[in-house]
Image 1 (cartoon, rainbow, N blue to C red):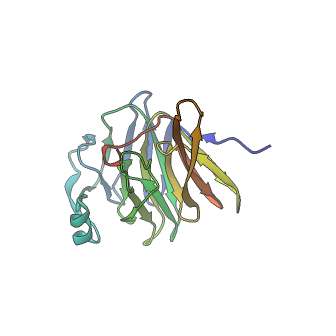
Image 2: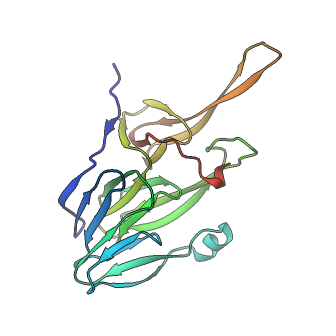
Length: 232
């Protein structure tokens, strides 16, 4: 019998990886706290909750500025550095999940759900067509790509509802509702599958759409289906 996706930890205390120590605590709206003394952390705008006054906030430019500007997505992210701890909280319920990246590893993430990353993690993106909902003339969406090019690092994500992880063997597949996937390893292939359903009653028909993921590698599933405005 195939194994079920497993719930990722909802609470983390004194976890150290990639030169930072971090904590995740809270229920409905969890808080991520990171000690940035040895490694800066960059994060999306408007999620700062509190910080030690010894920490400096600045801007970090991202690679491919012209490409980003043409795509209408952010060119800069906010970066925290200095001795102390900074805490983040998103304005909405959900689940914070840490992804530990070994040197050279890559994780691919659904757009708008990145929260923070260590400063040595490279952040790029790609436009993927035909993999969202394909409703209302939808032609695709963006995937954020994070890679540990400069050593071990961490990416923290915000999942809606709770986040489950499924590790796929080579050739193993899983079908996920288009709003339900959160992240995947670069080794996992994703494609859209459409079944046309017809009842024969007054000629009524509809499309049943899923994204199919093929291993090897991990896939993250969020229990609250989400379709961002750019996907509708």
